[in-house]
Image: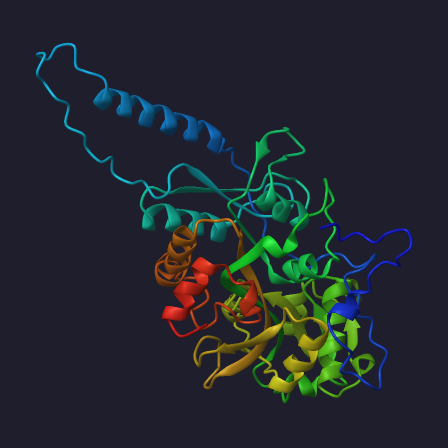
Length: 405
């Protein structure tokens, strides 16, 4: 299915696929990810070579044929009356070198992808998973395409096909509504065949304030002075949307850059009191908060009213509530509601259902033992922001057994 616009058809407005704006009194740019808006900061992943599956399949087929001939042909060393005894070869449900692909910049490292691959390899019989980034450009579209068919890495030309993809759920939303570009190669022909295995880790837009601040919620941001961890137009645009959803004027927040304060880092600007708010998009908990605490600065993270997240999700459905248990963050005595996007696992519809079931089970029952320093999604969070119709049948069976689907 070709999702590109025809000559007689204007390009698709991404806002149309996401419903009407909930902000009746404001003009809202629904295409905040368009030209001029760089992608949000992401963790980056390394590349790793992979042996093509066809080689393993050929070896396996040769072994099976040889085994069959061994039992069918008469043994020349046996007497004339000897009869071979046929035996059933043990079934091998999954075999070979499977690949977890991930879009990234410059082949950098992803601990999460490595931990998922190791958990699948150790937790599922006869499965060996490796993780890799085959591209040195950030191109989620081509990693989804590699679920559908074999592609070639642009740097070394090596062919590969993904068996799973780990990436942020916002790119999947764009894939499904036809607005995700593929920078290298053709678009995904059948995006409906790219299905969800489950969320793995949240990344939340967090507003950090000093512990003695009067600010308690994102509804209190009007009139504040803020600095962002990156001078990133997209993060700022989403922050504006948050303030609109909270019923406040986004232009009433003064945003300063590092060059406008004496501090040499955004964290130091908050420590010195040059700003009221330090805005980050990161995991929960994360190294930023830990760094501030180690510097002796007591900080808090502002809460989100649920209705704020609901309004933002009308424009960007990949954003969901994230309930943070009491004690997860400094000076957090009660549950805290934040707004998050998710690093999510995706597979092709033709993936074996039993394998998909085992992959989901391993992620939600065993992965957490490997990632104690950075908590992963619980089974209850696995489908936050996910259309139930988009869940792979094998994973859906696992979630149904746990009352999630």
